[in-house]
Length: 241
Image (cartoon, rainbow, N blue to C red; front, side, top):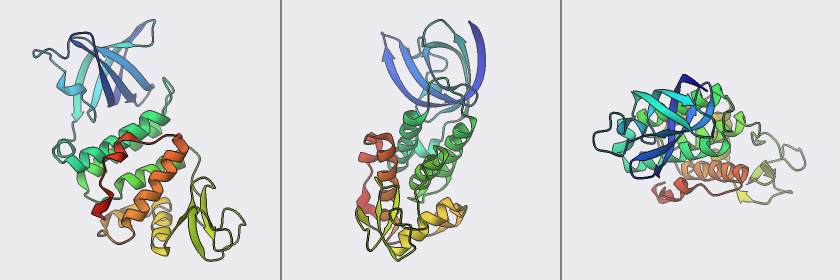
């Protein structure tokens, strides 16, 4: 049993009793942890607002004997105010949180994942590109070791013209092996650029006919890896593309 401090992003919260709240956090040094914030639902709580989902904080917790730690101090690093004021960006930010909540392991340190999440939220806070979430999903899959095959047909290995994409197969397929979803050359090139270190250029480009296609394909890959639908994605309006 000991006190410890860490940087954390609030993933989600639950009510506990009449005044307390359980908070799920992804921390830099301790992985995903859950803590009890006592009395935060009272109007006079000193740090209730600092423990809302999306908050980036420095936090002090007391490690007890059970699964839940006790939150004793919280200081705000960034609340990502613009994400909270824009319903579309808020929904996209929730998709990032939900994906990390699903892949992160309890108390398994993963500093790279934590930094990825903070950078993703900061990018979304500063950029109105609809491909921020798609890019985050692809980078997260790469981090998990399940990057899709984009250079040659995942079935036969040939570099014949690529015409389809199948998340079950794990990549693109040629004309002879086609199944899954059709993919345009523009969407394929964008996927390759995102995973090839050219993300900044992709995010700087205006919305195009293939933008929604890339977003959908990245989401299909992420949900296939998680083996579940992402609730936050369901509220996003794909028709905007």
